[in-house]
Image 1 (cartoon, rainbow, N blue to C red):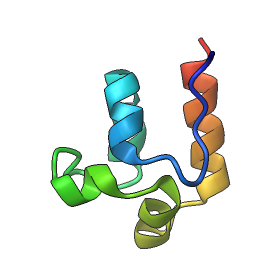
Image 2 (cartoon, rainbow, N blue to C red):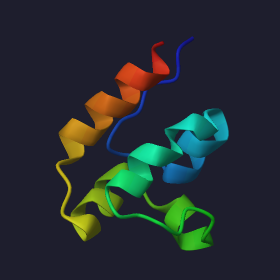
Image 3 (tube, helix red, strand yellow):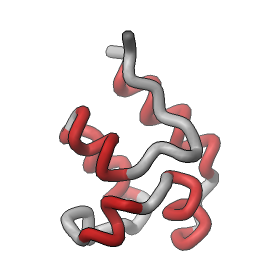
Image 4 (cartoon, helix red, strand yellow):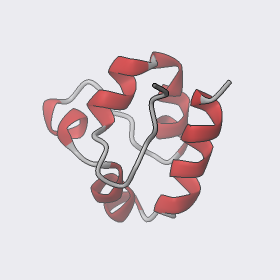
Length: 67
């Protein structure tokens, strides 16, 4: 079964599944990916904090992961 990112998926789960997704988080201004609180945040929470369109980031991540 394919890994699919949703608004509730944690950043840690995404990075654990595929570390090549890190640039997408760095691009949005999230530079402390190893921080325990950042890894435990959902995509939705991180996007809210960083002023990023959550649906756009989810689409980019899912497109990347489907390759």
